Image 1 (cartoon, rainbow, N blue to C red):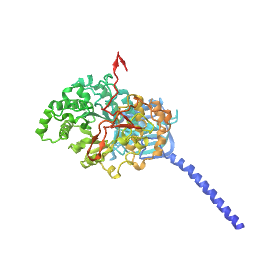
Image 2: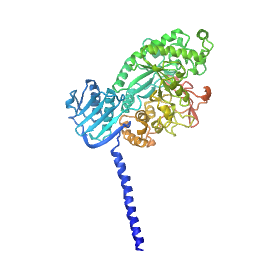
Image 3: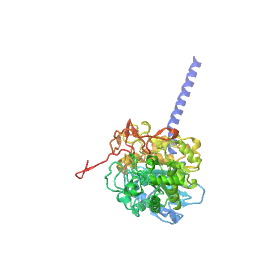
Image 4: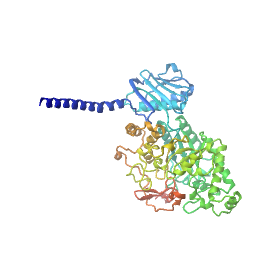
Length: 592
C-alpha cells in the first residue's frame, strides 16, 4: 500500500511539472517569437530584435556618404513630417548623422539593403539608391506603426533583398478614368509595399487616354466616353500630366510602362481616325487597325515615338492580345488579299504576326524593350528584347512556349492576379472563374508557389509577378480602393519574400496594423477580418447577359472573352468588355 502511494505521488509530481512546462512553452514561446517578429510588409529576409530603443526627435539628423542620396534623405524628412509632424534635419555631412544613409560596393541583387537600429544611431546600407530607398521604407513602416505619440523605435537588425525584380501592378484607365491624384496615391502605396512597376493601360476599345500632339483627334474624339457611358466627357492625360506622374513615380523607384494596344482593341483610335480601321465584324466594330494600309504603320510609329519620349522606362507594351475577336474583318478586303498573296501568307494569323513584328521593330528602333501579352509568343520576336506577360492560366502551353523560346516572362495569371475578380465568395459585383473561383487575399499571398510547378519557378527567365485590374466594373475611387486593398499588400509579399520565409499567419497579423493607415489615407478597403465594417462597394448593378459567342482555341476547348471573358458570378454573367455595354443616353440634357 505504501509503495502504491509513493508511485501515485511520483506521478502527480511528474504531471504537475509537465503541465507547468507545457504552460511555460505555450506562454513563453509565442512571446519569444513575437520578440523576433516585425510589422513590415513585405516580410524581410532576416529580422533580429535587439535590446534597446532609438528615439527620434528634433535633434535627429539625416546624413549620407554620397550626394546622390540627398533626394532620399529629403523624402524621409518629408514623410516623417507628414506622419508625425516632426521636422528633422538633413545634412550631407555624414559625421553628424544619427540616421546614416550609405552606399557601398557589393554584388547583392538590386534592391537589397541592411537596416540597423541602435540606441544611438540608425544605419541604412545598400549598393544602390533603390536599396537605400527600401531601407527607408522599412524604417518608415516601423515608425508609422508605433503607438500614438511615440517615437521610440525598438532596436533591431534587418537584412533584406527582393525575390523578384519585377513587382508590378497594372491599372486600366481606358474603361474608366481616375485621374492624376488617384494615380499618385496608388504610387505612394506601391512604394510603401516595395512594388516597382506600374503598367499603365491607356488605350483600348472604350477610350484613348494619352495626348498625342501629332494626332489631336485621339483625345478630342477618342477620349470621349467610358465603358458604361459612351457620352461621358473627354478625359485624358496631357504631356505635362504624364511628366509629373512619371517624375513622382521615379522619386519612389516605380517605373511606369505605357501600353498602346495593337493591332486589336483599337476602337477608340479608329473612332478618331477611321481611315486606319481594319473593318468591323458583329459585336466588334473597328476593333483592329488596317494591316494593308501602309499609312497605318507610320501613324502608329508616330504615336509610339511621341509616347516613348514621355516615359524614360525604355519599355513599351504593345498588347497583341485577342486580335481574333476582330480579325475576320480583314478577310476578303481587296488590299489585304493582295498583301497576303504578295507575302505568301496562308492565313490571317500570318498577317497578324507580320503586323506585330513591324510594330515591334519600331519599338526596338526607339531603343526600348518590347512587352506584350502571351498571345504574341506565337510571333517570332527577338528573345533578348521581349518580355511576355502570361495571363491565361488555362493556357499553360503559352508559358511553356515562352520559356522554350527564351523570353523573359512576367507571371500575371487571371487566377489569382486579376484584381477585377471578386475577393470574397459573397461579393456580387465582379468576376468569378467558371462561376466558382475568385481571388482572395490568401490566394494572392500564396502565389506563385502553391499554384505553379516548382521546376518552372526555378527558371531565371521568370523575372517577376504582376497583378492586373481591368475596370469594367470599377467606375469610382471607392470601388477602385476596394478591389486593390488589401490584396496589394499580399501581392507585395508574394513578389518580394522568398517562399521558404513566407508565413501567412504572420502576414495577417502584420496586415491588421496597416488597416488604420488605410483609414488615415481615406482608402475604402475590403476588410478580411470584419467584412461588415466595409460592405462591398458596387458601382454598377450586375446585369443578366446571355452568353454570346465563344471561341475555340486548339485542344484547349472553348475560351471566353479576355481579361473579363464571361463574367460569371453566382450564375449571373456580367457583360464582358467589348461586348454589351449599358449606355447612358441624354434626354432633355438629363442623364437617364
